[in-house]
Image (cartoon, rainbow, N blue to C red; front, side, top):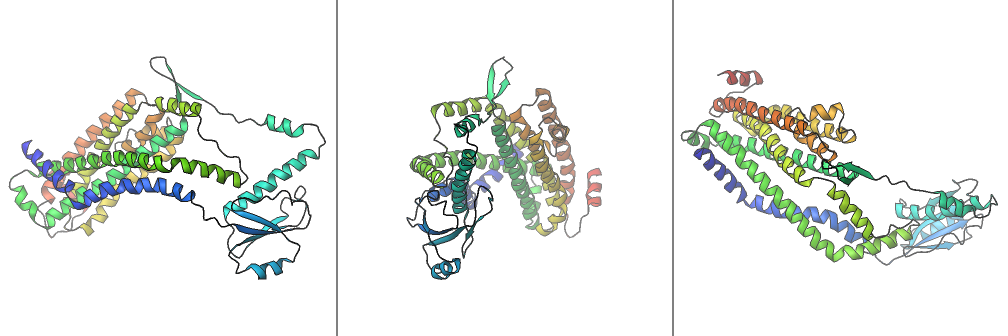
Length: 437
């Protein structure tokens, strides 16, 4: 065990002290936070220019409907469309030409926007929103029923179903299917990403040591199985270290940056929603914040984090041992492609199974894929936020543990033979023979 610990320490320190690890560890949270905050910041920047929208209203009924805002000015003209086009083709302030050719209450398609460039969604939504509200009011008024508009508005009701989960202690907890889906899919994708990235690192590290003949010196002091396990566990610790640093730094950077631009973005977002003729969403009220906190309290995050680590380690160790076996059997990294594809196919299938399992967490696909060791680390993380019986979690972890022991034993047999074999093209049939040695 002392030799394995030395190999673990060597793998961990050499990888953590690399410049690429340090740069990637600190740069990735900045990129993640930037992906969240930069679009919000850019959306709050206004260039101050206004686009002129020329309107040819053949019905002369919509002069008071199309209202100017901070981005668009409507100019009603009584000229041919060709004349306006020739005059404003090179005018930077020209936004588009709006032609209303008929009564929109009778023909909703009697309106069109013309421009030398593709009309953006902001302008289209703003114009259609104004016209839609006006047409609805006109249709309601045509029925000549007193207070009809008020009655229709009062009859519109949004049903917001509150989901409540019964706790084992009898306490009711507010839940959220949307939050459960988000937590599950993020956890599953992170496990998928780490298994692929760090499993490939194990295989690459084995190939590099074999091609450089360093392994011949190492094998003289330690057993091949000890070398393989030390390498696998050491890289696993590197992955966990990087993961926790990413989470911590992303939260800190997002919080600090968000505190500076958050207030401004909220105001501008409301103004933008009003300018597009849509109903603005008000800022979160204290009751909404309390509701969100209650939903978050409905999840057992301690259980999710602990099981995330267990499934990450189980899934990684399972696949990493197979990747290490493949790396020991080939002479160069280019030869690993034909052997690594069968190993990555179950991981890819697990992602698709997780997506479908999120729609039915208790269905047969979700149940069986959360038991099969090659897919359980990913699929089970999708199911956990929805609630999984304890016996299923224990059985899934037990199967994963036994499968890891079995694949590690098999990989150790292949590793022991392949690590010192050079100049021979290995096949799957040949590796199966090595297991019997």
